Length: 241
Image 1: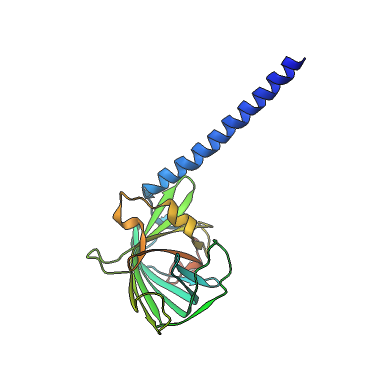
Image 2: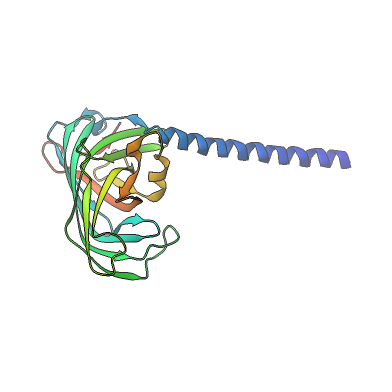
């Protein structure tokens, strides 16, 4: 009887170990697959027709958006709006404008509230330009935002004013950043930017997979609702496939 109990217990422990290993392997595989940049996708309307070249769209920030420069400064902007144009079924160009921005001491934990304001003025509006590429992965739908100018023109230039500013006064934001589409194929899909999503796509093998604020690693934490703004697709579902 004791041997029987021992055998069942050992079997249970072995099963738990196997399941844990499977879960770990799945997460690791997801990260590796994301690091390859995902698979190219297409912009579609109602998931059955390509968006016409020249179709315009906009995305409006929901709540505050944050540019995080870990250990140095966090820049919170209360308002953000992206406007863009479909160049082809596989890429779009976009311009973002951010206002009502303040600098804060960086938080040490993801999701923590900012409590210490830095007396450093952000010159507004902060304008960013990007090429937007739709990407597919088995875990979801993504958008890759990268420099619209292949010669190395930055996304944006952030200018800070004040003696208390923790970094140089003029800071170029370069590289690329990935966002996840929360509700693909909807009238107003939600675009999610986060430290976690961005890290999944990073790889040292590809130079453009990191966002840089000057010489420092940077991340974006923000949400935005997107929609089509030109006929004949106004009010229709927007997505990638």
